[in-house]
Every structure is written in structure tokens, then in C-alpha cells.
Amino acid sequence: MEPTISVGKVISYQLTNLAKGTTYFFTITAYDSAGNESPHSAKVSKSIF
Picture 1: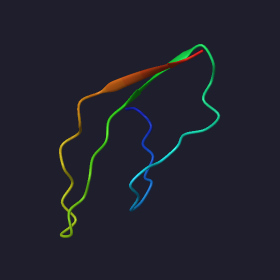
Picture 2 (picture 1 turned 180 degrees about the horizontal axis):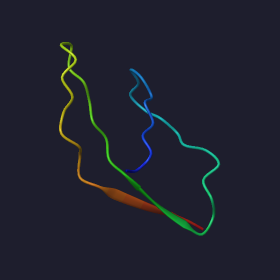
Picture 3 (picture 1 turned 60 degrees about the horizontal axis):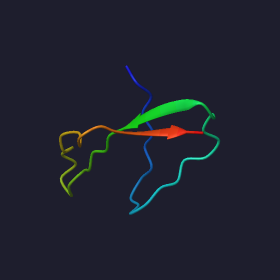
Picture 4 (picture 1 turned 45 degrees about the horizontal axis):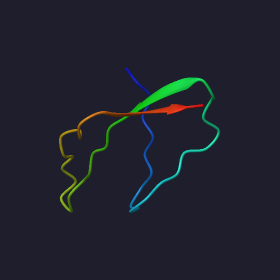
């Protein structure tokens, strides 16, 4: 299982201290007012050089 970061109720988030020479993969989910979680978004990647 991949690590999960819960960022709370935000409209943006910035990750810091990412290792150079590494490719990271991300998906997001959202919760509605009843606490239901959405399906994961499509996976995107970012390489840090």
C-alpha cells in the first residue's frame, strides 16, 4: 500500500522535501458533507530532478 497524506479541508497543498532523482505518483479523493469518499482520481506522476 502506498503512503497516504490527509491534508484536511484545503483547495491546494504543497509537498516539500521530495528526493531528487525520484518519480512520485499522486491521486486524490474528496469527501462530501455526509463523509462519503469519492473514487480516486487518475494517477499522475512528477519526476524531481
